[in-house]
Image (cartoon, rainbow, N blue to C red):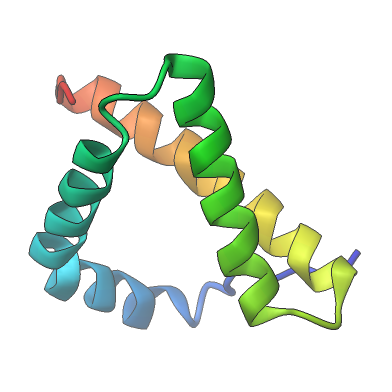
Length: 92
């Protein structure tokens, strides 16, 4: 499977982008979360999975290996975010 995980040399630019866009990221997440309030926890998980899959397939519509690699990278990033949030005592 092809990897879409960034290289060490690409990380500073990506971190700078995320840092710059962090307020917009949080606003978007908050809005999406509000849209799912009426759904059960199982349906919320399904909605997030479908949104993620649609977004990934829009990026790599013809390459399943790259799509799956991006999915793996996103799962890894989610794990990192959860660990960092726990260390910092952040509650969502």
